[in-house]
Image (cartoon, rainbow, N blue to C red):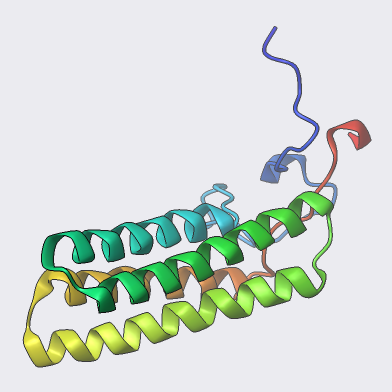
Length: 157
């Protein structure tokens, strides 16, 4: 017998109480569910670490401010998204998190993409632009498939 059940658990697609169209709400239709906070929090940590690294390596206060600002904003968005999911409600927190995620990803894709085109430097502009574009695609996908799955408490199963 495995470990005791957690009071908060993400619902696997095969346990859904409501039938879904194949691939609806699942990454690539492969049955792999992924909530947006699984992407947002590591993305925010990456930006925060990159800002600190830019400051330590080159003394760039702009890197620290941008990486710290965007990283903190995305960590906040990820935490709000996870909190809204755990409470089983969308509401204002989920909407604010989604808007914040999209705005950060769009700004970083555009600004760092322009910077890459001008400088042709892969690090950091090209990498941040590419990662931000991929994350933006993920966010658009999540919105177009209905967002995060519905929370079902373990006790209700």
